[in-house]
Length: 365
Length: 110
Image (tube, rainbow over all chains, first blue to last red; front, side, top):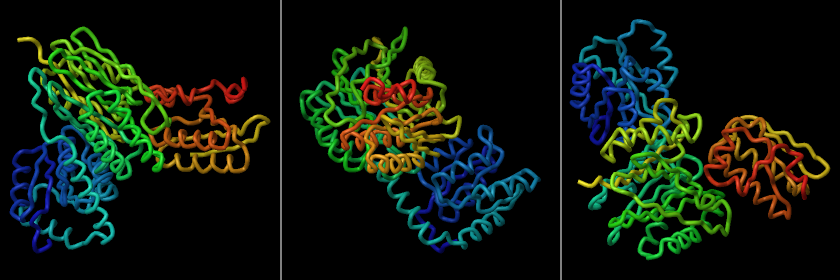
């Protein structure tokens, strides 16, 4: 192991409590900051969220097959990956190594063996360029995460939450919100493509949107925003789908513009409406005038906006909308709704970023 | 993604087979750019063999549409499958890239 592993992160993915504790303790003693996860999906989320230099991965997990976790990790992380296997067959080990694992260790193992394996792995350096790329990507992912709202805004009478999961370390989805006098502004956007290029566009869109937040007329603010963006987007041959809304908290009035996003939903106790789109994505058709829309959130109603990454898991848009409505009806808490919506899209191979924002007007007491 | 180009009397007929994604998108741009450079500014992209399109693929179609219009012509799409239609409708792009049933129908009324 490198002499000073301070600042290095490890994620332990293991469903057996005792073994998980043993792994975490042993690795923690080597100076790693350790995050633990009891399921494959939690583990993937931990690696995405915190980054990792080392991952230990149990092959026998309750939700996903360990080999599947291995395959998915390799789509966005270059961490040293140690498989922990109780299976006697060598097929799994070979398959794991082919899928990008660095080494394996068989249960039962001693802390000493574990440490020796880890030290041996870290003696094999990754190619320098790869390491630099991975470091740059990790840093970009960190910056992108820091651009997302850190905490829910405090809006009396409303419960607001958002969540975003990029399919790679960085992505083209983002959401944002800010409170204004008597209200709240919310945006959700999806830049064309994936990865670093999409992330750069997303950051630009966020900044331009924010700069128009003080403009009192939403329609005008949106037009100004798009005029600025169209120029940049034309140069980069890109476009962005954008949902932007302003909520007046007192009466629950939501004014919105949907530029090619198509997945804004008004969820009521007795049904769900898809919000009317106002035109194509920003940057797709120069000179577009978007048509704004308006809904009223009654007590208990929710505005839910999701990104199209969710659709990967469904046959068509209607199926996805029904699934979201179902999730909203089963959870009171906005954050719980967001988490559950993201989970809808994690069953199959996740190929696109997924984002959800929920603004729920609290039911009258 | 595989492309074919055939010069018809009224338009250039391009077919695309496979997945129109981050990999296929730049190739489509190349194919259309070449066709337009060679003097055909009326282009039909037949998507009968395109089983999937993502946002990069849609971006390529939009880019190709701009190319054809800048050259004084137009680009139309035909024969789209359900997933491609869904992406077009979701993004409201079907108003700009209105899918025609067949390639021949695309410029029939011009």
